[in-house]
Length: 309
Length: 189
Image (cartoon, rainbow over all chains, first blue to last red; front, side, top):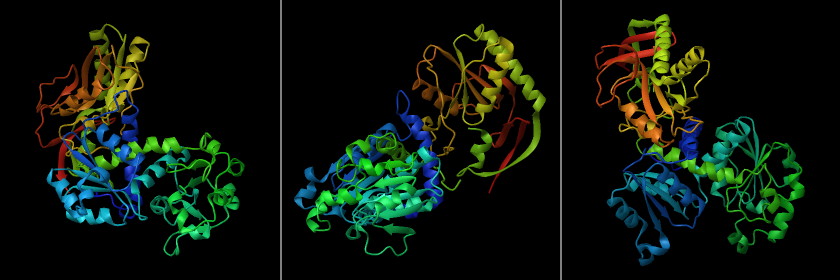
């Protein structure tokens, strides 16, 4: 059966992830056309419900929905009745009463999309909840790695940076390992999760020793808003030890790729010139994001695709 | 989409049991040859002509037709593939086959397009394909070649080139492969 919601990578399993990635090929083709639009979801309405700031994810979902001819509605907290104190449940039920088919949710608290899924009949897509998960980001990362390296099976991937506060890292670890990659987390001790129990990953603080061995180096955004939590002496010190500087990038194998979920802090976790190297696939990630989200919307909005087939 | 795949993919899914062979591999080859000659005759050659195979059943047929056309005329027309799933009016009934992707690496504007499919049934796939083609350019003309016309049209669509007219029951299934054409039933699982 097709899934009804996309809340977490762990709901999909290896077959589910693989199914979405194969479906994505169809939408990469659609996006490459002169007229990159198909009538597949005509008459469906997709609402983005964003309680946190976002540029790429919101625009990416909106572009994806429009390329499938769905109608899109945008909700942003700053211009809504949430300012007047409306509760999450009332907001969601109000939107649903207008007759919608899918809600794309981003919220600062983990578990909000799961909660909304119990309240509404519409398909719920998690576009990032707290430190928990960001499943479509992980799917587009997997797709990009496949595109460049053929497969994830046996590939060595280093995820570098603020793993502790990163929903991207959490979803990526689940997706990468489900598809057979070996994941190493690299971070200062204060930015590693307090426990790695149950995670099929290794962790280290030494980036230089990891770089020559990996096929993919995945840099997380250094969340500057965490600065005041005193987890790091300074951003300069972070860059000195864990930033992918030009000199460090030379340690990488020739065919290794550099990834980043955006938005980048050039000069902090990644040097400006490294982000422009041919091995950096960061803009490709964004382009694939639209196709992956088209696949997800198409899958959830009554396409009848069976991922197990 | 090939009838076989459509019928065997969920949610329609079932088991196909062949009852009789209606065309042998040789019949199929002869039909391809005849259709190729008809295409050349009707279009006075192959100038600005291209073949588009419908995913998935029309694709091997389009390739065979192109080879046959090359044998007859000395030049091979360009061949593309088209998946019209996103344009269907019954999208939820006909699941998408992953990896059955549209590939039209040439501009259709001003060309004569010969759409190729294995079986013509309700005509809804062709209707969707006509819509899809428009997104790739404005063809001068579109013609339709099918190996089997099994009737039961629901739309005003007729083929220009037919391998075989085959009266069928709605519940039957026609399966075209390189080994020939079979007719049979699908029993639900």
